[in-house]
Image (cartoon, rainbow over all chains, first blue to last red; front, side, top):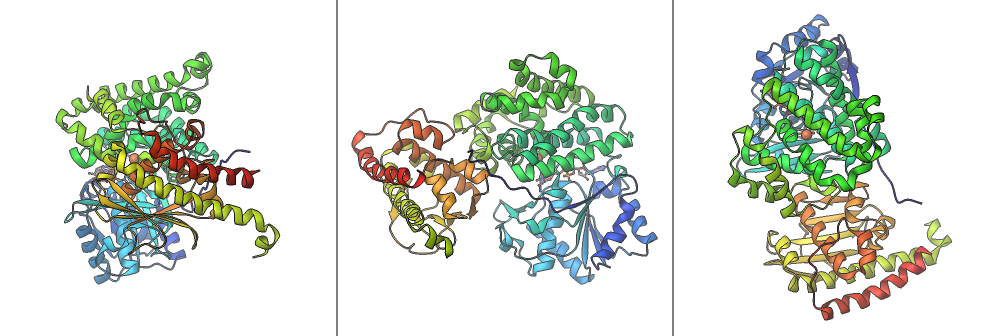
Length: 395
Length: 181
Ligand SMILES: NC(=O)c1ccc[n+]([C@@H]2O[C@H](COP(=O)([O-])OP(=O)(O)OC[C@H]3O[C@@H](n4cnc5c(N)ncnc54)[C@H](O)[C@@H]3O)[C@@H](O)[C@H]2O)c1
Ligand SMILES: [Fe+2]
């Protein structure tokens, strides 16, 4: 008998499709919430994405009590404290996050403070600290990438100690994720591409790393298929609402997959690169994905071969000899990156970003070895291995 | 406590085995940190006086190791002198047994949700790498390959250091044979 064992958990209600936003008032009232606060950022507000949310609520006589729109890209303990202060002084009773991973992670942390009390979010850092449900919490993702709406994690920077604090608890999960195609129509090409590659990486790592399991596999493969078949058509036609919805759903599915089976070395390197060079997370994923797959190749040949079916479709899969499918999967991901480079100059190498100096590679490698994601990578990466991958990704 | 009355031998053997393995690992970890530069390099960035614990929930056997600085470890028998900084907790003795009898890799056990980390995850990752290297040292190669992700290329330890650990281990493996059979 095999020793295989796994756990799978996703209690988030998913509300997806046309006029999904209009379900928010009903869902809030079902939890007895009447005074929601919206947490978002300036970019999302400027894109006009709050109007449909607010209108949907007001039409049902649900008043949005206040809107905090100043979430920065790397949210910090100070920002969380400020938002919690506003929440309390306005006597809010629930939170709606509208935005990408940055706004969502911030809102998760705010929910800890306003539910558990206190001003210092760092007291709640770590795993398993929370013991009970938090305030009603809804997430409206506006990027199709992080899958944060279905993950039990938030990362917040402690700017005084200059460390990143991780928060892990199933109580961070929202009561519902509202996926409305209107919310991603305005995503600029560069962010569309980078965040979609984040989702692609979530699915690919979930499917090839050590904690893969049959349930997360189902979500991962479905996500890969949706991204492969919709991303380039959305790049050609950004107003394609059906394609946008496909990407948004894929992102949520990839989020469900990786929150149950974890990610690997692409994320370890990506987190380190984000911390040192301040590149967007999705871009880092796109930079490293093919190189890490090549590094892991002999340990992941079987699942990577299977992935070809979802990346390229049944004809290409059938036409490729079984012993070449894993390599063909990597080639397909490279072609996708080349196409994205053509569309919006999404960099394919560290050098192409223009924001990384070759002298930083060793520091990135060292930091990556301390990242939690490295644990689930199928190969035991040493410092030298990480350095070698970075050199390949350099140019 | 019904099960314990029904299969007293098997339960006791498993518990004894886990306790014994923790002792083997504790002693070996201390010895290896004095000799192996790779382990020391890995351990160096842990704070001085850092206390690491591996334990079986809720109140079972424990392995407690202190980082003395410069990558050297000391094995503490019995209780920790102060609250530990990092604890890796097996959710059940059965899971500890799977890992400590080398039927399941430490990283797989993490992946399979068999244990929890209480403390800084980056330290947990360092300690997992140290434990992997320890297993590569003290286990016969065939078993080590099953227990860790990749067999390291640079294992050069004086035989006599290993002998002590291997003698313990022999006793331990006899337990495995009794219990697994
Ligand atoms: N909790 C998790 O599981 C998890 C997983 C991965 C990443 N993250 C975090 O998520 C963050 C990255 O999130 P992200 O990639 O979604 O980006 P983001 O939230 O940082 O947003 C990127 C930019 O896009 C703008 N934007 C967002 N939606 C828009 C829209 N529809 N139209 C126009 N502009 C829009 C924003 O204003 C912002 O300027 C990182 O901080 C990362 O740490 C969290
Ligand atoms: Fe990611």
